[in-house]
Length: 214
Image 1: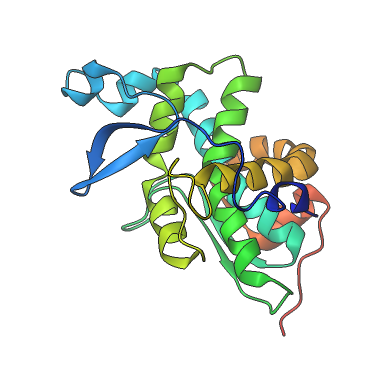
Image 2: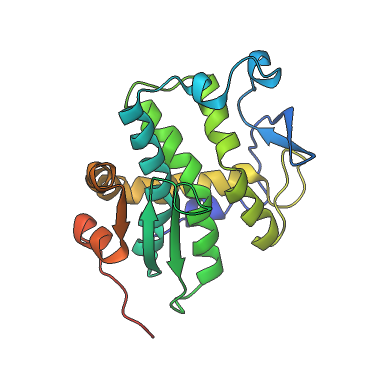
């Protein structure tokens, strides 16, 4: 798996237009898609704005979490668990353990960025995409983005033209997802049905090797 075609643009000649329509946790939260006024004013919730059926909603969450887990597994990280239902203090989540593979932090970062991009892609391919749903998908990735802002060097920016633009992280994620999308979509209905999946089960569903302990 190789995101190099996107990584070669680390300084980012082409960047998205970022919208600063909302604040999260007291700070501006840039999105590639504008956040509609009726959401910002509290007239509708995120769930209402998405407007998906329960099964569609589970599938969208599954695409997001598999968007993390399948790239991690493909690059040699040990996926521990994927869940699309609340579990203690966690909502949907995917967890991976380091294995000492080359460029491990980069692969972790690409996998983190891949979650929201996989959900956006699934919505498009399912004929469910809209700008409003895309904006909610971005806002739902706030914890992922917080991790990337803390662990990615150089620290990503949003349309400033300096350093690593977040658009480039998205491009890298899209490139990796292109290479594993068929495996991801094969695992998606299994995860929707089971709600929870181990790394070993994911390896079996996708045909990817499960890394041994080091």
